[in-house]
Image (cartoon, rainbow, N blue to C red; front, side, top):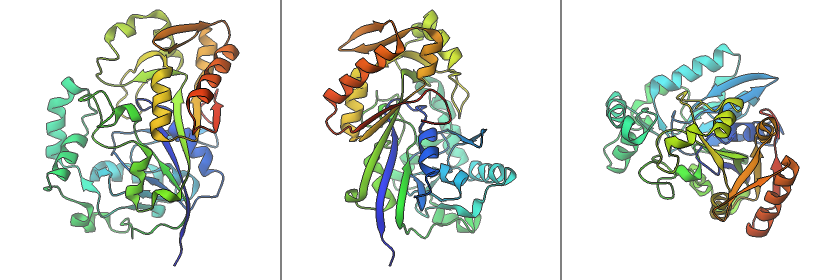
Length: 335
């Protein structure tokens, strides 16, 4: 019987859109992983992956598919059958081997009724209107339908629920969208924390590295009183949004921008247990020529990007005891 050697996890440390796809992509290229797995959420997520300079986007199917790795949609995910097959056809059309994709028989199915109900709530909560919340509600109300109830529609894609070797787990959304820790009720309906990945069927003792993704500035899609509309009127923040092309991968919605909240980042790193943090899009601030972040509820400004990065690195090293590595990224393809 083959055994699990180790598990690495990539999670978002903010409100989603933190360049997790880039991190998973780079890790997958190493060739050491036997599986890349998603553990939560549905097609309300979006990952942008670059392969040989070409950009691809997925919403549910794990990024391992782009690198010839078995890609598993775990039991705590929810699945829209039509959206699943749209991604399958998209991947096939681009030459990727979709036989590597497997889906847990325990995944719950998003129905047309779920989507209709979500559309009605979309304006007040700012959801993606994909039916995610109503589907999770029915799951916990124990009246939902699972993939195993629709086996014929997933012929060839059903996972045997076995893992072995080295596993990479790919997060969806971010910690501050967590159903428990986010600004409730403006949250997602699942658990983006890395320990949620254990629902795939491995012991927490198998976890090796936890990679946390964040940007050098904060962004938020959808409704959230902590990201008021007034932020969109700030000229510098507006320019960041333009330079960073800050639009949701799944919804295309314009994201609200704010300066990085270092206090929340410290908290996210510590409660998630991250051993490494990757801070992306430093090139956007360099293009703007403005370098700011919030720390201890005070907005700090620096003359150069290098000074800001140095200060931020020291703060994180001092306040995050489990953190071993801090990396900065200045492009969308590599760290």
